[in-house]
Length: 64
Image 1 (tube, rainbow, N blue to C red):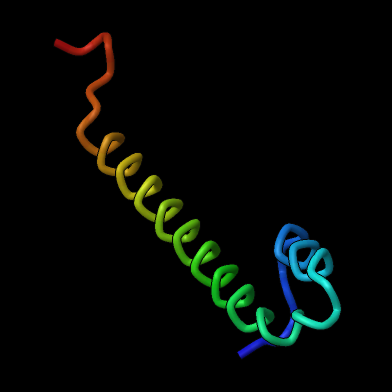
Image 2 (cartoon, rainbow, N blue to C red):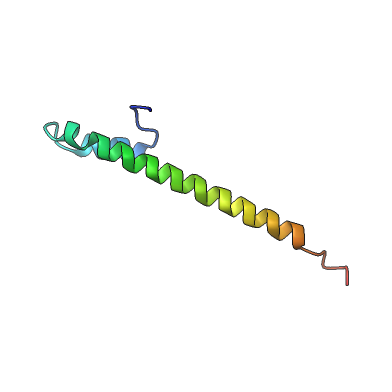
């Protein structure tokens, strides 16, 4: 498991917190980032799958 943020948003979110509460929320922010990246990957995979299925069944416009 990694300990550094990948996206600038979550890194900035942690940096914007007061120093006294950063350790308390760092793990939650890292988990939120992992969820965000996982959902993004899932959406990308599903989008590619649907596009592939569409291409498989798409007939050229000139063929009848």
